[in-house]
Image (cartoon, rainbow, N blue to C red; front, side, top):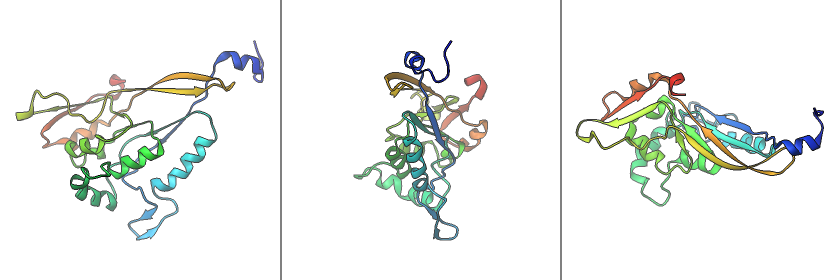
Length: 209
């Protein structure tokens, strides 16, 4: 038995503290701007949240950053980018702005929300094609139908991801850690895919886990 402050025991345990951070429902609010009032905002946008993320990371040796979905649509900026993205995605910049912002902030993985499907699986697939991080949806199956049947799953998300990280234990020693990531869609997501050339199935969350 050892006391909580016994450093020799901590050195031998290999215990690792891991901070998990997450954003949710960004809805394409990247900039610190209120599109309703037409004025800058001190409390809106991923650009503002970035400072909080940097500060939270600086407090600990080990941290992971995820997004819980509904990041792709929901602001006037998102509507304008939807109009131009298909045309510009083959240019020198390539990445959709929300994917570029998440990449710059070092997101470790993201999952999808129902509103990420608002403009179809084709658009979602284009956006996610250049993501440098895993996009996980553990209870989603998407298969082409009609003339495209038999071509295999649509390349939108993977059912799980394994992330390899080197972390520091409480004694400061380097440790290799493999981290499993899963994520889930709400069952109502099926409604967003009606009329699509894809057949989608969103399975029960508990059963899929």
